[in-house]
Image 1 (tube, rainbow, N blue to C red):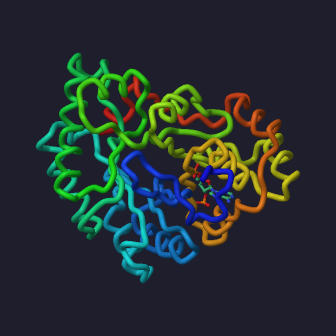
Image 2: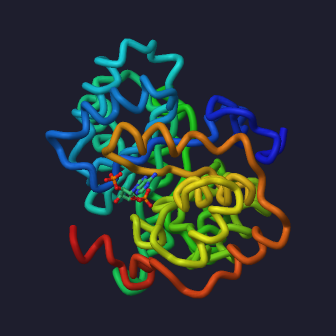
Image 3: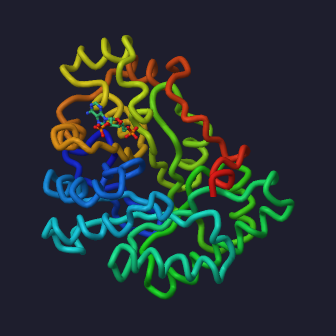
Length: 291
Ligand code: A2P
């Protein structure tokens, strides 16, 4: 089934190891602790079965709380979290996974991602460091703690180095992706290598939503710009992870299965003038700078 044929958020992409992943995830980056548990509960009750968090967001315990409060069974949900840059290395990774499991109150994680690659600017041994971290991921897979594993913010050179040094290939690459910043070469590289590309900030963290041209395109379909962006990601085979703290917008961001984009509009969104880029690039080691 291709993304264009999806009829609800419960339809799934299939990862390289056969694991099914619901095609829209609820993003929790920049949702404050204190707010996250309620938002996650609201999102699950609105129909999301896929939640995306990260250790560094500081809200894993509340994501777990929201999941429990939703009343939905664990095996009906898909939970992603991410490894942080301070925990690189095989042993530290093993410990980091246990911390995330404890924070979430879960006994397995559906998808665990390396949040940012180690890059040359950080260490000349970046390839070996990334491979050692990845071995920690492979160990935890074997131990049944992780159902699927992947990376985030990896460029082709980081992935090629990992492919050369490890046995299990990452199944996902989560990248910033929205009209105005699609980094299409990285998306295509992931897809050509059998990985699912996911979109963080599919709405440009809100920065693309007032654009006049996007508003005009969305209006043609009777949709909001946010819905246009979510649909655009899906039609590119990219799994969107929209974030909202507002119950109405949480629901609205799932209402994207009753329209499809013309080839012209899709092409315009793919080649849209630069807009809403976060400024985060792996080579600038942004994550290490704030660690
Ligand atoms: P809010 O949480 O107040 O709804 P991204 O998913 O790219 O990170 O973007 C998240 C930002 O977009 C947040 O500021 C969020 O604000 C806003 N947002 C999310 N959904 C919508 C929507 N349907 N309409 C307008 N703004 C939205």
